[in-house]
Length: 148
Image 1 (cartoon, rainbow, N blue to C red):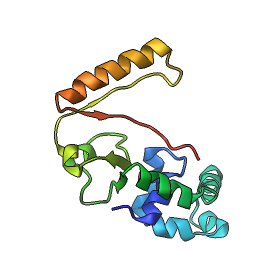
Image 2: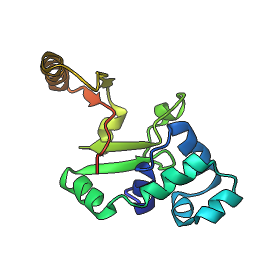
Image 3: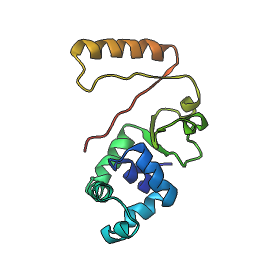
């Protein structure tokens, strides 16, 4: 868990499908260490090459500090702690960011999906609903992204 190369690869702006395809061929460390020429030899699409190379510019120390400060663990699809029920869905998340106890991954969960441009009222209602749900010991699952 919290493998530095997994964490780096989680910052690459690719779809889950593309990440899974790459991880079936190479480890995250191998992807990290590839040169542009090696990626071309492996027939990587130029857009994928650009996104991988751009991810090398992420301030990884800053990101690691953010994860540590917020007690967030990163779990890869290939990690033994990745929930089995998630492995069976289409477009599964390649990386899970877990705050709190890992055991919570295996209990009741609910996702709250909202707008990127939510109104103040929408934010208020979603916080209220999330609070009531979490008070009943149901985990809130969401998709967020780190902005460097």
